[in-house]
Image 1 (cartoon, rainbow, N blue to C red):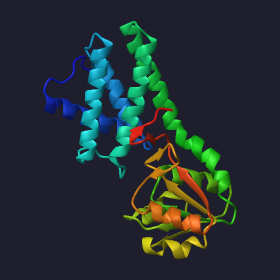
Image 2: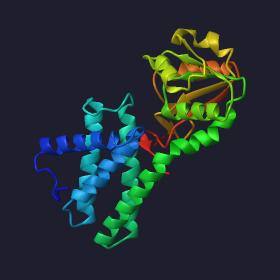
Image 3: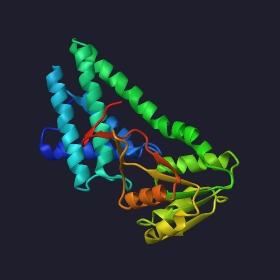
Length: 260
């Protein structure tokens, strides 16, 4: 890999977009925030900065370019929103800022940021499996799970429940074709009924558990997710249904990402 950053803004942007696409397609289930973190790690590898301030500026410039490209549709996000890119970048930058304060020697600090970033990305990759292990006991044998959207974390929970030998069915709200996509994601033995978004209140009566994904979770427990989630959550609350909100690690605080 080259040791210098692209000189012009256009080549810098093209390089970041290319690196993001490569990181996202490196594996079948790479999450968007993890791909964003991988790009920032590569920025560190290419950086010629000789001070912490210079490296911090390069990372923030890369963050701004990635977020702008995601918002403009230049990044292939696999159906996710630019919030996922922002979450990954902000989590990493806060981690980098803390490391700057802990290690006064620049070279040592740079190596530590790289090491911790790789560790963080590795842990993030395994988070979906961890959540599936913790979440599948909530799926009851003989139960009916109502799902909104096509969250990969929700799919992992349902797959794990099926692997555990539980027999259950799924009702999926058909939001932008997500319901039909969910049918393909789940094992053949899991019945999936796709219903219109407008019929959420009617079919909620049959559910024993409601699972939704989350682009981000704010500190008061609120969820940032695709349009229609509020209707689903309101119907679940009125019908007094068990509710699970699934996300890997995207947390928000007053519009800003919260490091955890």
